[in-house]
Length: 482
Image 1 (cartoon, helix red, strand yellow):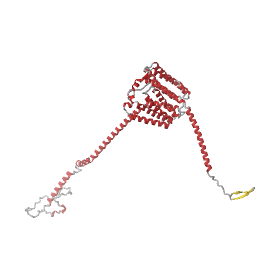
Image 2 (spheres, one colour):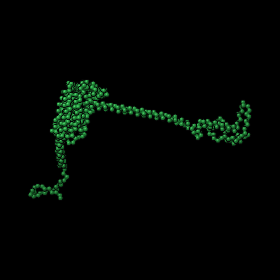
Image 3 (cartoon, one colour):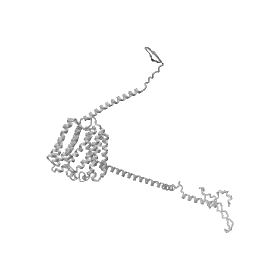
Image 4 (cartoon, one colour):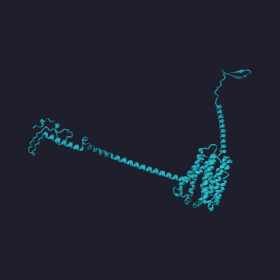
């Protein structure tokens, strides 16, 4: 048996069985000894002598066992990534999943918030679009857009008739825009004052104010703002005369004609005056003045409105009666008086075409065309007189709708330039030329005066001496250097 010194094992190869060695080599333990080592008798355990040291092989065997146990434990806790890739990647995958779980949840929250914001924005956009459509429709109905368009057409026709050889398109557009705004304001105020009356009539009960789609205060604010804007536009781009006519027509329609409809049948004639003012407005905007030939189109509109509204009042008299309006047809159950009033005003329109030609507003062809048109409307009124009935009244009403645009179109087609406007333009150009020439003369005088005030650039030479020259020896004569 070899003892410990014969093995030539240094102290580094001693293994304490009480401690583990984490840096053990991975090679299998050395098993060169095959004989069993006999235990050394220890004697009595109770003796005080220390125990004898164990053989080196036993110590090596115990260290190898501890190293194997440590490797097994380490392989269980940290599997080999080469031989067990799935097992080794599982902790990393779980750690990565646990780390990415909060970020995925945050991303989901962001997506949900963005979707909620998009839904709210779309709802707000839809509500804004609905509000714009609602109020736009209410403003359209309050303004009576079709009736206001007719007023604008008559105003534009008056502007063209009042122009000279050249029509100012920008001025025409501004005049039409201002007239449209003032007409919209007047129609809105008319409906504000007649809410209760309109609610009783089948023809008007679905308007914005009787149906409750808009408040009276809102409608009044709309009327005030658009009326003030239209009047200001006319005063700025046209002239004070046109703006004054627009403002007076607004007051006449909203505060005179509207309440008079519930008081006396004369409201029809007052309304005819209101309808005759827009052509004057356009003429004043173009020529800055009113003349006799400016009254042709307003007179045609005034006389045209009487048979037009007489037929309408006859057809809708029950509705007007329910609304509390006082119309001329209420006191005429047979319709005879209403028909005669219509015929009389149609006859008044017969000479208007000839007056337009005689006053230099149009050519002779318009006189013929206007007479033929008026004869057709007069025949309709005559049929209404001969047989007062809804059928003949409706026929005259539709005839009046065709008459007015045909009359205005013929007047514009055969119009002659406004001689007064041309004369005014000529005088203005001549006056401008005279003023320009006077300005040029004044500038020339001022320039010449300025030149005269400048000192002379030729300097006088001082005399060197004085000498007497005959025959005046007593006068000093200066002598200059040459």
